[in-house]
Image: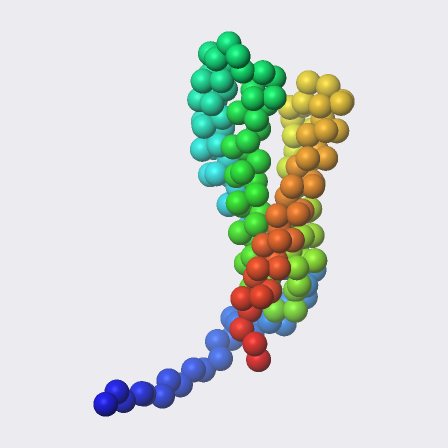
Length: 158
């Protein structure tokens, strides 16, 4: 016979604060979390991207599309993982925050990264800058929103 013991759970004051935090505050929390998660991932992605570009460029039959995929693929995957994870955490622990707020956190993070790269002069031309920023905004917003949907579904009921 298995005996079940009752577990007493006292509400944690930090959990109460998190539940009362406004959804707009969770947008900022998610943006900071997404950026912090993306930093180590993008370092690994840059290394992997360099290796893939060397490997693809040594293949005489590889086209420009293969070279572009080798260069941008790892970077976009790292962005999707980081912003999706941040969006899932916003959706799961965000109190009144919803998937829309998680998507807003991805948008805010991408906008901050875009402003920094423009300020640093990282783009060779205006067309490349606009295209890169558009991809950055779209991918991070969509993946954070999808992560937010997953997080909201995993939120405990009640």
